[in-house]
Length: 149
Figure 1 (cartoon, rainbow, N blue to C red):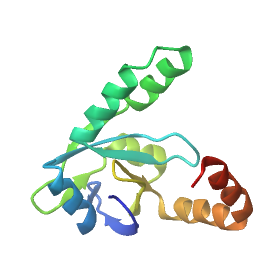
Figure 2 (cartoon, rainbow, N blue to C red):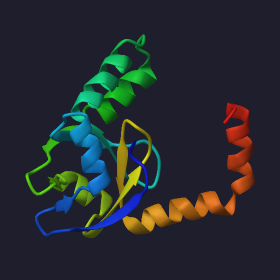
Figure 3 (cartoon, rainbow, N blue to C red):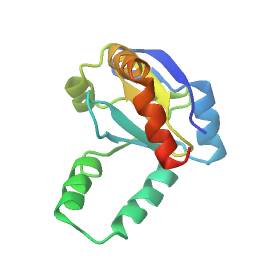
Figure 4 (cartoon, rainbow, N blue to C red):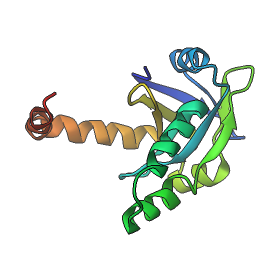
């Protein structure tokens, strides 16, 4: 499972170290590359899926009857996706277009979402997202109860 928050340095070339626990999950899946793409929601952040799970998700989305919204989603999500190798030192390169769009420089925050993906954020944006949840715990607890969680 991809879980936890890890803040790492982002070098001037756009490389960053994948957290050790995330690398272990990738190794368990026999994946040595990930797909980085736009994530839905604001502020802007990125979804990262191991290659095998990216193709699995793509197949699930392709099996759904197309609607105008689904076509837009595919364009946004799959159309922006870039495969990135995890190098022998455990680093990935965040493509320049993503770094520019998100204003990523100096630091990057990794946050685990579930057993299929993690996300990349500007640390201050992730802090604000956490603060939003903490400021409205009742709303989130009520929603979780509706979902049966």
